[in-house]
Image (tube, rainbow, N blue to C red; front, side, top):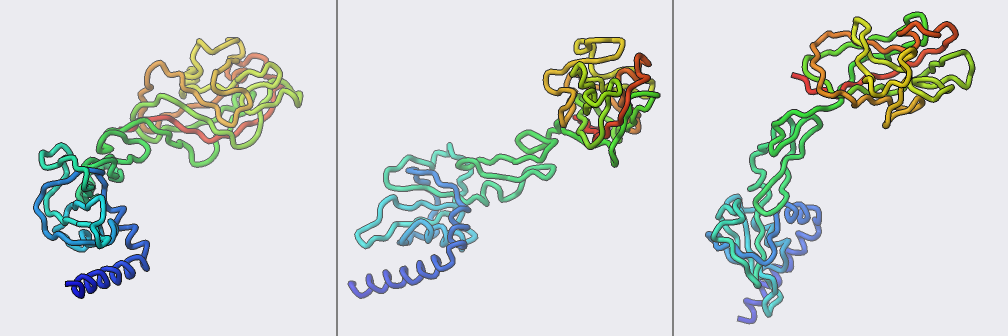
Amino acid sequence: MVCESFKVKVSLLLQSFLIFNNFKHVQFHESGFIKLPFFKFDGDIIQAIAVPNVFHCCWRCDRLPACLSLNIADRPDEDGLYECQLLTTCTANKYSGLIKTSKDYHHYTRLTEVCMDNKCLNGGTCEAVEYGDFQCRCPEGFKGKLCAVKTYKWHKTNTSPVCFGAKTSSFGRFYINQSGSVKGIKLVYVKGYVAAGNRIDARSKWGSGNDKQLYTIITNSSNQRILPQDEFITNYNILSYLLPYSNYNSEELIFKNFTSPMVVTAGQEYRIWYGEDLTNYGEYDNEGTTCAEVYVLALFD
């Protein structure tokens, strides 16, 4: 009996040595299971074996396609080995009556059981979050349990920077390339400046360094102002305004102030104006050109 016990221990130690020499392999297989501490699953046992550690128990389960979960003893026996029960039973429901608290065992279930078939849609990635449950890590533009629900996201509208000047109707054009709804517009500064007047200290990205206000206006193709809304305008003659989240020299000019999403159709033209240029009020000595990338916060059909 002593010789047999010694042979078993030597055999297990040799197998453990081989496993730990390839630690990534062991780590991969252990990370392929979800642990439920101090629970035991009374399922159908394929094998009951003695192992030196949890890595070995998980490794043995992973080598058996029929093994879906396992129980492992919390404490070793007198020979320093842990009882490992390999199970064929599905353990997807953590509220199953077969799951019981235990002071002597921990239960592990395969991640592949939870994410065996990637249920996530639209490029989502399945992740096990707790015993028997999963979540989908959704790409931008989707949400929900299975990433099935479309959400608003930023879409770039232009292929080259859109530039606008400060006088002589030198507005810039951009086009919506899909139909849907828009609830925000963002201009990202690329280069240049605009100025209300010909003084250097009047130059800025989006407005005027004189009064430190914004003058950049978004209109439709008929030059009807869309943004900003009336509540932000400080002077209607020149269409100067202030926003709480962007200023005349911000790297990004963000309009979030739609009262409700704006319905758009593919191919629609929109324009970027300098306020004094749009109203033809005091533009004669203005100067400069600002260029920007244009993004819309949109939910497209």
